[in-house]
Image (cartoon, rainbow, N blue to C red; front, side, top):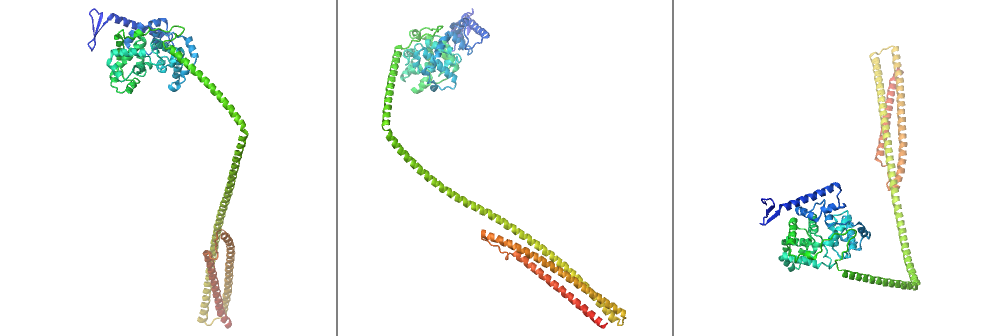
Length: 620
C-alpha cells in the first residue's frame, strides 16, 4: 500500500497482482459521513429508549438513508445487532399503518394456518402464535399467498427481528414480497419459471462447467435456486451469517438476491461437483456448510458488477417502492384469472358437496322413516321374541343362581363341620393341657407329702436313737450300780465274815434302795417305751391317712387320664411309694425289736436283784 506524493491517491497491491487505486478525498468523505451517522444514532440513543417499538423521525430516516448506510456496510460487512431493527425500518421506510393492520388482525386466524400446530411443533408457543398471526394477515392481504406452501419457511426467520412488534414484522414482509419477490408469483402456486430462468441464464454465462454439470444430472433451478429462495437462505446459513446476508440484500438493489444465489453455487462448486447422486445434491441445499461470508458477499457484488446488461435481471424488475402511509397496496402480480377460475371451481365443488350432503340427508331421513314403519309393523313380534329370550335368560340365570346357592350351602355345611372339628380338637387340647397341669400339680403334692413323711420318719428315727442312747445310759448306770453292790457285798461278806447287826442293816437298806431304784428305772423305761410306741403309732397312722388321701386322688386322676388318653397309673406299683413303705416297715420292726430287747434286759436285771436280795433277806 503506497500513497502518492500529493496525497490524493492511494495504491493497494493485492496478492493476485491486481492494483486498486482509491481517492483519499472520497475515502475521507466516507469515513467522515460514517462517523457522523454513528454520532447521530448515539445522540438519539441517549435521548430516547431505542427499541423495536421506537418510531423513527424524519431526521433519523434521512440520516439512515441507503446512500449513508452503504459505506458502513462496505466497511463492517453488516450492521450492529443493537441498531439493526432501526436500520431496516429506515431502509424500507415502513409506514406503521396501525389501523389497517388492526383490521387484518380482527379477522382472526385464517383457515389455512390451523394446520401449523401439527406441521411446525415449536417449543416456543408465543413464536408459533406470532407465525400464525402474521401468516393470516399476509393471506388476507394477498389471496395468492394462501396457495403458497412455502410461506411459513419464508417468513419465519424475519419474525425474530421483531418478536414483540407484529406490525413492523408484517410490514417488513409485505415490503420484501412486494419488491424482492415481485416475480415469484407469476405462475403461482408453481415455481416462477421466468425468475428461475434469469438465474439459469446468468449461471450459464458465469460458470458454464457448473451449468453443464447440473444439466447432465438433471438438476434444475427448482433444486439449486428455488430451495434457497423459499427458505430465505436460513437453512444454509447460521443466525449471524443470515443477518449479515440480509443486511446486504435489503441495502442493495433488488436483483442482488439473484446474484447471491449464483455466488453460493460458484463458491461451493467444488463440493457440489464432487457429489455423485441427485439425492445428495438436493440434500446439500438443505444443510449448512462452512462458508467465508466476506468472500461470499464479495463474489455476489463482483457478479452483479460484471453481469452484462442484456442478461442483467434489473431489466425485468421494477424499482423499489416503499409502502404508503395509511393503507397497504394490493399485490396483483399473480395469475388472477387462474386464481378466479380455481375459486370458481372450488365454489362449484363446495356447492356440489352441499347438494350431495342435502341428498344424503334426505336419503337418511327416508331410511329413518322406513325403519320406523318396519319397527312399528314388527314391534309386537319383536317384543314377544324378546320376552321369550328374556324369559329364557332369566330362567337360566335363576337355575344357575339356585345351583350356586346350593353349592354355597354345601360349602357352608362343610365349613361348619370343619369348624366344629377344629373347635373340638382345640377343646380337647385345652382339656388335655389342663389335665396334664393337674397331674403335674398332684405329682408335686405327692412328692411334697412323701418328703414330709420322710422328714417325719427321720425325726422319729432320731428320737428313737436318742431314746436308745438314754436306755443304754440307764442300763450302764444300773449295771454299774449292780457291780458296785455286788462288789460291796462280797467284800463285806467274805473279807469280814463277822459283822455287826448295824452293818447288815445298812446292806439291807442299800439293797432295798437298789430295788426301789430298779423299779423306778423300770417304770421310766416302760414310760419311755410307751411314749415311743405312741409317737410311732401316731406317725404311722398320719402317714397312712395321707397315703390313703393321695392314693384316692391319684385314682381319680388315673380314671380321668384313662378316659382321656387311655393310660392308667398304678399307685401300688409306684417304686417310690413301695420304697417308702418298706423303709417305714423296717424302721417299725427295728424299733419293736429294740424295745423288746430293752424290756428283756430290764427283766433280767430285776431277777438278778431279786436273787441277790432274797438270799440276804432269807438269811437275815
